[in-house]
Structures are given as C-alpha cells and as structure tokens.
Length: 110
Length: 115
Image (cartoon, rainbow over all chains, first blue to last red):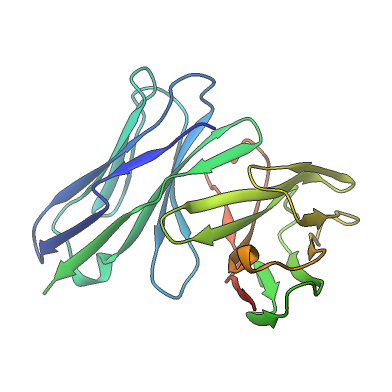
C-alpha cells in the first residue's frame, strides 16, 4: 500500500491569515499528485493535478507545489477566508490505482 | 450535463441483504471508480474500470462486485451486506487514467448503514 500522509490533521486559522499544509507520499512509481477540496455535505472537488517535479499550480488564493524526488507537496492558502473552511485531500496515483490521504481539516475563524 | 449521478443517497440494509449502488456519468469518461469513506481512513478504492468491459480490483474489493457494460454506468453490488460495509460510498470518473489537468469528478455519495 502506497501510504499518503497529510499534516496537520486539523487547523484553525484567523480570517486573513495565510496557511499551508503538507502531503507526503512514496516517491517510487510516481505518476501524479492531486489536491481536492471537500466541503461538508458535498463531494470532493478537484483543485490541482500535478505530474512533474517542481510543478507549481495556482487557482486564485490557493497554490500548490510538488517535489517528486523527496515525495511531498505543499498546499498554500493566502489570506484565508471563512469560505475556505473545508477538508483538503491529496491523492497520489501510480498507474490506475489511487491512494488518498486522510485530509487536513481547515477552519477559518471570522 | 449532470456530471456523476449516484443513487440512492441513503440506504439501510439488514445483514445478509444484497443491493446495487448505481453510478452514471454523462461526460463520456473512460475511467470510473468506487470509493468508500470511513472515519480516520480516508477514501479507499474498492473497484475501478478503465473502459467498458474492463474492471479491476482496488484496495478493498472483498464483498463487492462491479460491472461496466456501458461507458456511462458503473454499478456497485453488495452481495451479502455486513455491518463492516457501513460507510459512505463515492463514485468518481475521469476522462482517462492519466487524469490530465482535471482529476476526478465525484458523485454526491451514498450513505449506507447495515444493521
């Protein structure tokens, strides 16, 4: 089993603060790394798919980086807003098999 | 364009009963998969399909069957429900196994309770 680990498990930040979380994964047989945003009572929504070492992706105030050699990815949120409150999942696929982390639960306090 | 449609949204089964969770997508996606979500475990892959007529096992396939007779549909069958199968089930699809720039599109989930 290709364990994907995310840290921290949960996080509370004040509105306006910037924050980041980590996804670590085995670097062997790497194909792609995904980030998803999962709001309560909804379905996970794809944020980024990254495949190349050094990839950086950005969507509004959210960005992500990828290091496939050392097996980690960071997700950054700049100027957190209450609507950013959600669980952020990362997943790694190796061919057809996908392995998800347990997520980082972010709460942004107004 | 409805995306990924899962039915039912909620279901209660008695131990030993069988049922089928339905999943349909209208995006012409080749890759479809089923996950279960349990507290503290993350999403775990049950079965997946890379195209019509092709299915394969994921991480936790025991107690479940799938078939893929059409590109659009990917039903998940519980053969003899057990309390350990109480979970939230998600169907997901993507254009290809390579995912491109898009990643998965998830259904809204089915909350299953086995008593």
